[in-house]
Length: 90
Image (tube, rainbow, N blue to C red):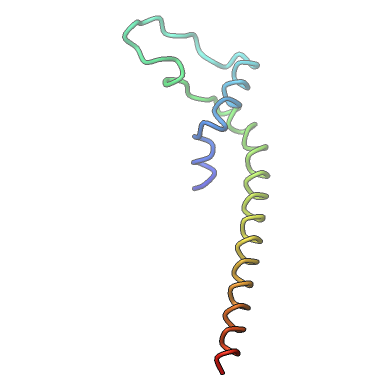
């Protein structure tokens, strides 16, 4: 689903981490030298995901609505142009 992709993207990850930092929800860091970096191991808390979804969902809906209006407008222009060309041929 698109919202799942968006939540996992680099655009939203800093917001999730910031929320967890502010609410002390990030677990203690692993001191093992062979472990992966903290950024690769970070998993956002459920509270952070729910909070960020409140921002992400309206933006996603708005973007989708704008995109559909633009697409519909372009489609209508192409259809009108096609009809005009058909009339010129007759």
